[in-house]
Amino acid sequence: MRGLVGAAIGLAAVLSGCSAAPAGSVPAPAPAGATYPLPPRPVRPGETPLHIAPATEGDTVFEVIGLTTGMATILGSHAEWPAKGQFVRIRLVVINNGRSSVLFDTNRQLLLTADGQTHVPDSQAMLIKRQPGQFDLGAADRLELDLYYDIPEDGTPTALRAFGGPSLQDLQDTTGVDIPLR
Image (cartoon, rainbow, N blue to C red; front, side, top):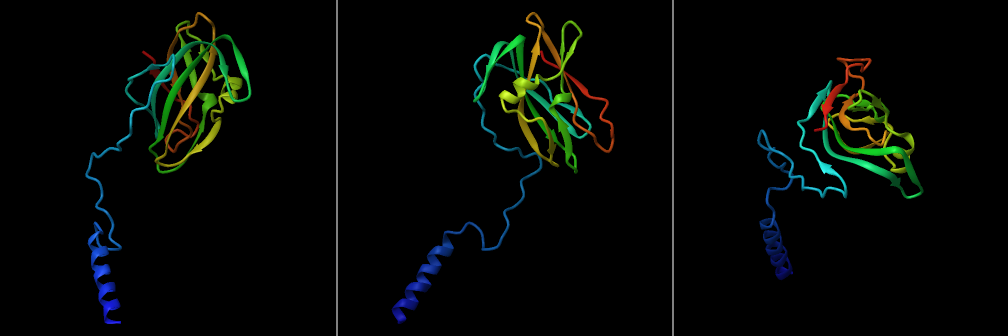
């Protein structure tokens, strides 16, 4: 019996030596200015990576990170859809820095073109590519998504007019922010 007790004590000593911190302790918080180590992601075929400064509208921050133009058709898991002109795809990161959730509506995000026109996302393209419509973006949440537009074949996208959703500062969400695409 003494041999078993001694072995158990020895095993407990070895196992407790493997622990980085005492049981029940909490790791130290990250220092101010620390960032997440997000790995780079490959750019998709035909896409241009964009390095545009983030833009803020209310509690929402927008980062446009990719642009694809001149797409004649789009393919999904269940359909192929031709453009009336050309499809334009914008890769967008949306971050809610607010303390409350915000109702985010992809249909309100407008593409501005060189001819002064504004374009809403193409509902069929968004559906085929299974992109979200209207959703609740939680407090401190980050989401990356694609927006698809069908613009004239000779159209040139110049900016994205982004709307973050109603907030305590802008209950109607009428302002928006223009983000140049070049």
